Image 1 (tube, one colour):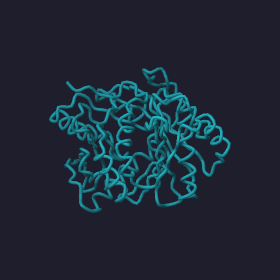
Image 2: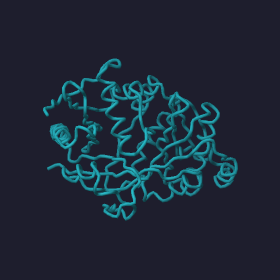
Image 3: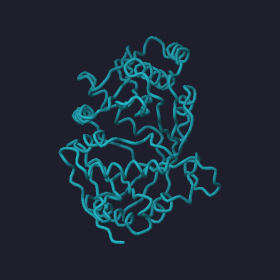
Amino acid sequence: MSFSIEDLVVPAEITPDWIAMVRVRNEVEAEAVGNYDLSREPGELLPKWQNPLERKAMVLARVDGEIVGRGVYETDTDSLTTWVSVEVLPAFRNRGIGSTLHDRLVQLARAEGKTAMQDYVTEKVSDTTDVIDSPTGFGSVPRDTASSRFLLKHGYALEQVGRMSRLDLPVDISMLHSEAMDVAGPNYVVRTYVGRTPEELLEDMAALRRSMSDAPSGGMDTESAWTADRVRADDDAMENSPRTMLTAMVHHSPSGEVAGYTELDVPPELHRPVAQGDTIVVAAHRGHRLGMLLKLANIALLEDVAPGHPSITTSNAVDNTHMLAVNEAVGFVAWASMGAWKKPLD
């Protein structure tokens, strides 16, 4: 079987090739986790790829003209690390397609002076005892899966393990919300909003997104250069998508400091699950149950503006025990795992 490899030119509008590429993404992910909860529509992904302030590239694999695989490359221009993924439809694996896609990503990373490649890979929850333990001491991933075998073959090492969790909706949060409000006290004020970030909060949002690197990350490089302009560009991309972002942000009134935020990424169709985005509480303001307060405020906003979705999905590092405890108290239950892998470049 012969195949060809080509660079993707991001289109100005949805094309048949773009639809086929997204199908590969969704089918590979669904095969890995056992459902389509993480799937995206072509029109949901395209605006992110058109963002002029984010460096992205993609390589496609074709067999008889059909797109059967993709290699994804994402990075900050000033970072020495790139995020990559290689996805090939199951029927076309073990023919060298994935390795060829990966080789192209390595070439691109070296040409741009990167020193490491990183990948997040989702897996079904497994009861196998043949596992790779996380060096953090928390969690493991199955050794004998297509993704683990591929990553080990290409020089990656497991750095951290995450847990994918789901919260069935609707959920009664009234008592938890009251308790979190009492612990936080009157000095912390939560503001929620739908859609793009208000102008007066752009700098606060940029600071919060930069602070995401403070969350437990094992040996992964998670620093990212967020500015107010990049937040605007990200909001532009979201506005051009059919999805809607819901945000809860908390400030410390006496100092005026921004203390944390959380996001929910909402699809337009009510039968699809909502995706939990980032949640972070700045280190100086931890210990006041703000993570719980933020999540509950945003769930309440979701039920107010877009009720009827079946669930919320989220992911957390297993060694982030505090945030996992918050999620479990709200009602999230584990349904898949996620490995964080890293490959040094010579």
